[in-house]
Amino acid sequence: MKKVEPKVYLIAETSLIKENLERMLSDHADKIGKDWYDSTLPTASSQGEYLIEVAGRMCYESYGVGLNPNVTKIRGASKEYLENILKKGDGSILEHATCTFAFINVSRVFTHELVRHRAGTAISQESLRYVRPKELSLWLPPEMKDEKEFVELIETIETKYKNLEKKYDWDKMDFTLKKTLTSALRRILPDGMATNMIWTANHRTIRHVITMRTSEYAEVEIRKVFDEVASQMKTRYPLIYQDLERTSLPDGTGSWKPKHVKV
Image (cartoon, rainbow, N blue to C red; front, side, top):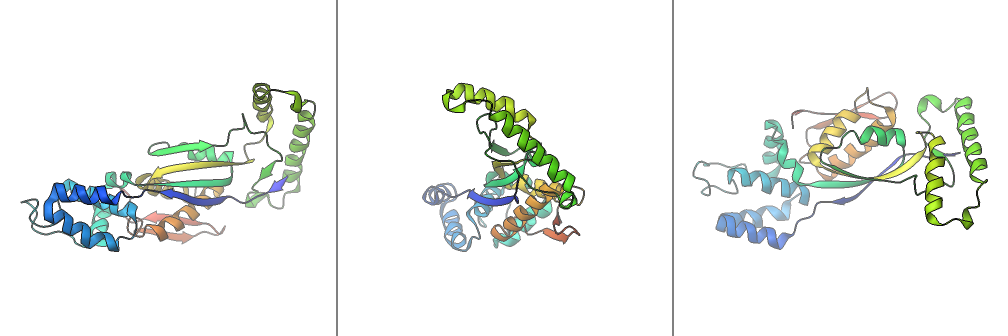
């Protein structure tokens, strides 16, 4: 048995097609839109946050005074604008930008929990129907780090799995038969074994999952992972996560709670 630690990698994020965005704002909002683009894009903290602000201002035609006759004053600074969005709970515009994470060495306990948050997500997970594990890797929960019987039981499962696996001449099989036997053998492997997945979600969903899964009542592994997700999001997207605050917990993880919960 190989002991592993869950790892979080932010591997992709929303990017702008700047020339088309500039052209759209110029065509749609004339000089007001072009001036807003020229003055705000150079100081944007991230392209995802900028896209969210573009979408929000589209709703009220608030790229500048004079575009919408009902608007006589606008919030110029992006921080102030998005802070007001969070305060009002206008979360729908946060759905325009996404992030993609690779979660490595997480358990199937973790993935079973995460797939319950299906709205606004895309998920691709390592398939044990096709992938025959070379060894049994596992993250040990804090409660079990000193439990020898727990480790011994996992090692027994691994040994019996390998013994059963050796009964078959894999080199003489075609891929279809390998897939069939691999699929059958996976049924004896524990949910706690390490796996890998790619998870894409929009920022509204990410905020929600962080809040739910870093709760002090959440399962410790998923809290550990989303504590790291929250830290990365707070750093990379300071405006749309500006109201999230972390409280340290006794197990070394953190619980993140937003000031504005209805976003």
